[in-house]
Length: 551
Image 1 (tube, rainbow, N blue to C red):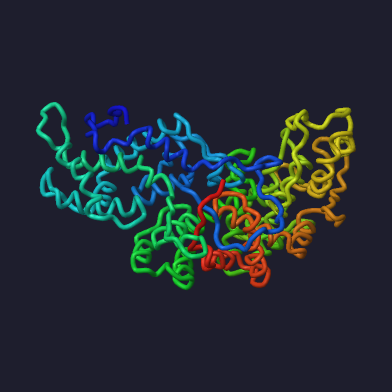
Image 2: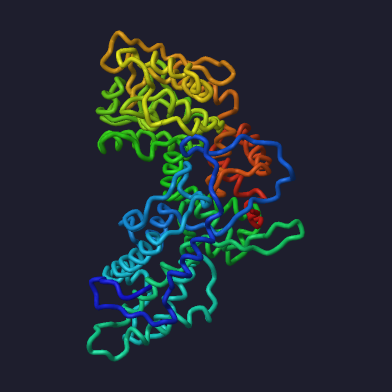
């Protein structure tokens, strides 16, 4: 820190021994950067499974900085801070499609400055809110110099913030803040809670708070066994997108996370928490691309309620996961039913039957809006979505001289489908577009807001047949037939396992890791339950191990 910040309280001066230098934080940020992900189209991982060169033991891992979303949730659980300060003060993470890809994390002066402002404002606000402050401190100081109360606060706060046990000697440097904050200085109105604010402000900029640091103990097979606290953080950020709670930290301290049965039991408890529900809503929104879609807030809100209701029903009511794609009904209110042309639900909100080609989440306006372009649907973008997000089948990059931000050329009076087909057949374009556009044509009878149509918008003479083709020649028309093809082939289940694994390890899979993904897929095909897929990974031996990253 370079000096006091305006916090609304008296100016705070920092003793040298508790300052977090920008240089130290910069080094920590750089430690989490390990190159870039090869991404042929947009932001979509991962590569197809090549032949493994050695047996899979564990995944490589490095220190991973908390993503913007993870930091906001952690601050909420740690301090009751609900204003999403990371979203306000830090630049948005790069999505690939997830926001926790450590290979994309970059150091910058803006990041350092943003973290300093965030820490100052969050610390100020928590101390200014008496109820939050008192919950955080956990004791009432007898006077401004009450060291016993301050130490008790630090022991609890540091354990939760650093997500591990704290040795008494680690508390001592922070205790110096109490004497500093309460020194006799008539010009500065400081007290016991000034020391609390200083401690919070320093901890929120500590690399051990900002990063998930895993070390582990070496094993004979070259892997390192994570300790209970490291496993607790893996569990909590995998299932909650946030820090461990006290129960999970107690499990770690008692050794209950050291074996598969203990990890599974902890994960089952965590999946029963509303934090897991909110986190899995967000995971699906990132995976399927509807975290940000081009519609107004009211319609987006209705789309999100519809989609989250289906995810909740399938994942948390012990239903087959394929029902997420094959459900014959959807959750709407009167306005959304009218929007889709469906029957209104009884009571103004509820489940109604689909008609025609619709089924499951692929018929939701949220998903159908997510891969659009040029203010309209795009067969190309929808083809990319199906292949990369649902089949985990990447597409080659376009030539460097191709401007992918321009609509297909051709006579503007031609129908949209004709222009796309002409573009697909053009020299230099066919290699890429033949892999994407034929798939997207199968969803063209649904507009950018998920409404069924039979012709181009505003052009009745341009009828849409809505017939698409998957790689290999299978033909489909509409969301239901597409869902049947990719679920019956097992491609969707394999891709789901890949997506879960990619999110868990914070990057695209490496070749050897497809052994693990294959195991997860086989089990997933047998039980068809998303929560059990998560539990299968949690109780695997690899979940409690790590390998040092290789260049």
